[in-house]
Image (cartoon, rainbow, N blue to C red; front, top):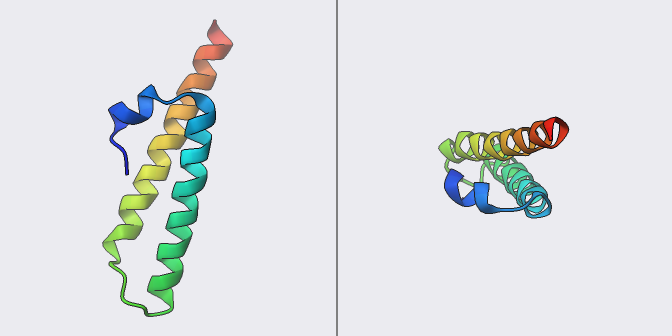
Length: 68
């Protein structure tokens, strides 16, 4: 997981890729927890927040493009 400052430096296409990877990772964590493989349940909330951060940055950039 990258910090918000590192995410802000990425361009739109790299943010999209980061979002795809984070969503996939979140799915895998959820699946492993539900199947009882003993993953840390707290990881789910961490990854959900990370996905939300990326989506927020993508939305901010879209709003800035519309204004400019």
